[in-house]
Amino acid sequence: MVRALARVDLGAIERNCARLAAVAAPARLCAVVKADGYGHGAVPVARAAQAGGAAWLGVATAGEAFELRSAGLEGRILVMGALSPAELAVALEARADIVAWREDFVTGLPPEVAVHVKLDTGMGRLGTRDPDEASRVVEAAGDRLAGLMTHFATADEDDPAFLHEQLERFQRWIARHPGVLVHAANSAATLREPAARFGMVRCGIAIYGMDPFHRDPADHGLEPALELVSYVAEVKRARPGESAGYGRRFVAERETWVGTIPVGYGDGVRRGLTDNADVLVGDRRVQLVGTVSMDNITVDLGDEPVERGTEAVLIGTRGGERILAEDLAARLGTINYEVTCGISPRVPREYEP
Ligand SMILES: Cc1ncc(COP(=O)(O)O)c(C=O)c1O
Image 1: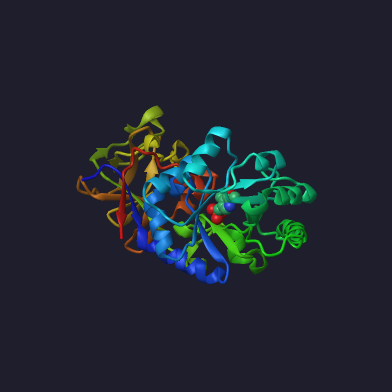
Image 2: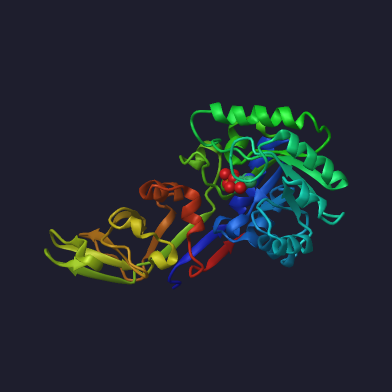
């Protein structure tokens, strides 16, 4: 019995990529596998994404590109984040494409490096806001120029006004530089805005079968790829007045059975889920009760105890019941991205083909 396991269905990732590639075509698909593949495991995810038709891999850091290359992944890798001089050396060693938006940075680059110039059309983080400066960087890149890019701030939000503003700014700029690979769309923009797809889309969250709009991934034919499972390690009768967990946050009001599941915030099951989550225990939806501690949570099994060793599913589908990363995110007031990225290294990842 494994204490806790993140089971990753690589077939689901492959199918999600195939679906996104079909939606985006003729644009190419760049599968974004940064932050260890949004917690799923960058290398296996990258292989599955390529099998599903991803032509490019996207990461945030040079170290992430290096990890992919060291594992034998071929094909184009784009490092999308800022690079310190030390990181630049690592990115070049990994034969990765890099992003630039300052002339002095580009003029110092070796001739063989492939550069994507970034216009900040409204995200307000990396890139230059000035289209003229961006064009000077394009000129400075010369033969190293491999792409023109931007990133959207509100593609997942209901009101499309700012997305369209960013898109228009970007379109005006790229018109000055025809014949270059152009990319802008994250998952949300890919799914909702055909005009944003250009020559390539950069999809992260959707390749994992999570919904960029924080609702139901099935709305877009996406299959969640990750399950988080554990088991019931102990079952005990709680009489009225008896409690479970730190701070006695749960005190039984009536006789009930309490199950202890040996996962906690040390595994990425966030403390904010205290008294605030469901768990599927033996196909039954039960409530997490009491405080989430580092290594344990407790659930109220009601009048029906289960055998020790019964499976407990924190994210996944069993017997017609399902708990999505989106559900936990809603409970926590965060986004699905943070839920899977937060599953700690203490949880082994197991891969199904
Ligand atoms: C520059 C860039 N492009 C694309 C993505 C992928 O975004 P998403 O996971 O929403 O598809 C990210 C991730 O945040 C990003 O930083």
